[in-house]
Image (cartoon, rainbow, N blue to C red; front, top):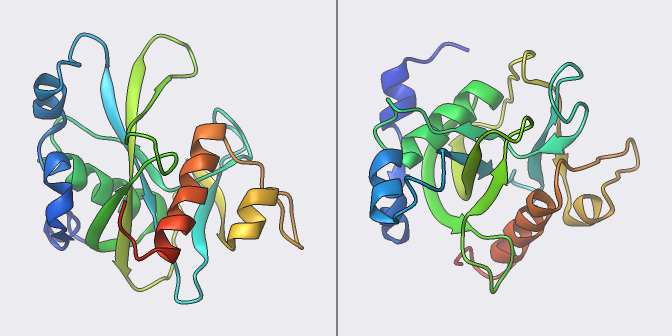
Length: 193
């Protein structure tokens, strides 16, 4: 994966509907009075291929929630200029994909506010995760084997069943499954939350 950090950090467009996430994690936590309740922000990124399949990645066997499937994503770092820059960085680190644009936020359902709050595996930190739809430059996935061991382009029925004709696709958490299903619904309805 050869791409400069500057290319990863600046090569994407942001839809006006996402201005609330086009700020730093620290600024978001202060603005929403969450600095004492939430330890950090995380992202998940929904990417569809030209056939309408969603990219999912399988967690490494040695990691927490081993062998389970999720969207690419991860923690927003303190040095990420904005939450969306953190999302772009994570998408590149985990899948080798360069974000071209972020088009909308994806909640866990049609009547659910964006932001999934969860604790880490040791139950010592609370995170708030936002999922975004992104268009990308190319679809050649390159995984970081320290984090993920496989990827799969899944249809909605495969996500719902957590199974394809080739393999089981156990999703990490119910909230992640709900976000994936909502990503498909938003795609069908014109990509707006």
